[in-house]
Image (cartoon, rainbow, N blue to C red; front, side):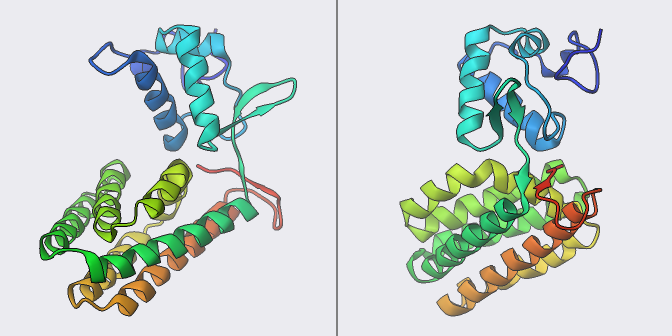
Length: 245
């Protein structure tokens, strides 16, 4: 009998079973479920039944419950009366708001990086950009996302403002969901590289305003592509809820 929460197989599907390693099992459960949501394996609106999750991952209910609490704090799931936990669906307003906040904070980080980062950190940022370009050349989104995360990790650390990092960390899962959508566009990859190259070039010149504007332009372009992609996934114009795939 097919599992309620696993639309691609049955409860004995071993691809999501948690392996016991040094990290705490509860952390592994959280990361496994988080990855399943971000990758689209668990779909927007899909119920996440504790019993099925335990059977799928071969873990205890307390581990699953804690993971669900963490996922809810990240905005990836929501608890619906009479249904329990379900994978969250972002509204259009959510998507627009996320990109607005992301754009403002990343642009500020780029501005600060241009003036505050050391020459070694600038070189590290350029190396992270080169790694991203290599990943995009591979054509696999699962290679691109970690490389883009690495680029932003270097950018935020060099900006020297822990508050920016803290705020973006709370949004990171939803940003990754949307990043997967925007980067799935066949034309988005080359444009993304050009946009980020403009940010890095401005930073290398120590042009704070140029870095700020280039970062804003990059996020605005990503927002446009993501919203267009989401609108094409079968939702009528003006629909309140958008499935994030």
